[in-house]
Amino acid sequence: MTAEHKALEREIRRVGGDLADAFPARARHPLRAIDTRAMALASADRELRAALFRFVDVVPACRSLDDLAAHLADFLRELPDAPPPTEAAMRVAHTRAGRAALGAAAAGGVRHMAHRFIVGESPGAALGVLRGLWEEGVASSIDLLGEATVTAAEADRYAARCTAALEQLATDAREWPDRPVLEADGGGQLPRANVSVKVSALTPLLRPEAPEIGRRDAAPRLRSLLRRARELG
Image (cartoon, rainbow, N blue to C red; front, side, top):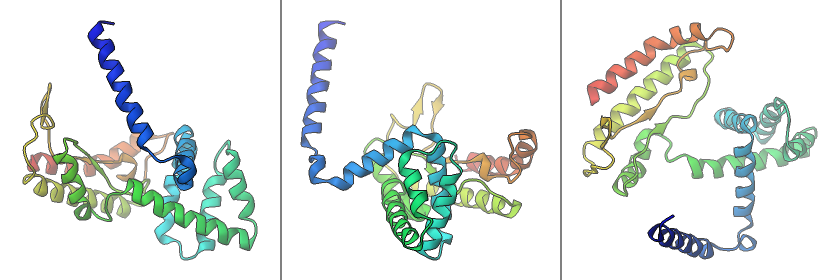
């Protein structure tokens, strides 16, 4: 390592230390400490993370705290190796009072997760945040909530939502300021508007034992999306 590189590394460490010192202590912000612990737990366990996001998908359909608790417990029971916190959650779900407490905690957790990870209730509501990121030199791709589909009608609706989001984002992005660093790389020009598409949401037929059937069913919906993306530039 050259002297210049060593000096740069020292400066990076100094700036990082200053930033870390500027954050409030965990003791003054217990919610932040709990949130950090929860996110670390979910990040380290792929099955737990998937179960939690499936739960988030069904929350709008739940009509009571008891309903929330029952769905959360059902998703957690599917985990092959549940960590201690999830085992505790499943235990309290066996009583009415426990379900009420678990449902309230789940509702609060989902609201907190929504504020942290969801930038808007609709693509239109997210445009301000996306433009702000672009102006600060950050490109982004939006991801519509919704995971696996179980009917062809659901897959059609998901494809239509993706198309509408792409059209709205592409129209707004034309008015964004130029950011040459974000608009091209070694492979050529890059689009300003990006939508992440889940293949699992484009077909109800995607199965590990027969992936080709799902791919064939999803292909027409995906091709339609790609054609529209090409038209929008």
